[in-house]
Length: 179
Image (cartoon, rainbow, N blue to C red):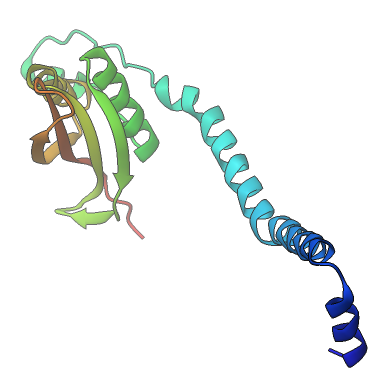
């Protein structure tokens, strides 16, 4: 900075100097907002809007109608196949949880791997509810999604004395895709 600028600033009253410093700070904050924070915030809001628009589609997973069969092998063949994608599995788990009074708070898909000739599509689910509701929900998963298996259940204390939080590892098994 030049000596002339220093002398001009030194001659200014303290009040004007503080007002100028405040104005420079306000301009710097507005520039930071416009350049660094606004674009990521708008991208986040757009992603949340897309997810909210997809929620009704996920929640309305069609339930297959069972076909009456004559013998045991025909009943096994007539058994509904269940969901075939991660989103369909999440939708089926959420619908089942709502029917049983359980609140699903988070789901996290894990990497897909091939096990015994089948593609294992694992999913970690966090839920909360009463012990009886959680038990009914887990039993309902076995009935509603015959191609899914519950691998691990961790029960934790819940927000209220009668509620429990649960971390459930669910895996969907599909025919492996051959290269």
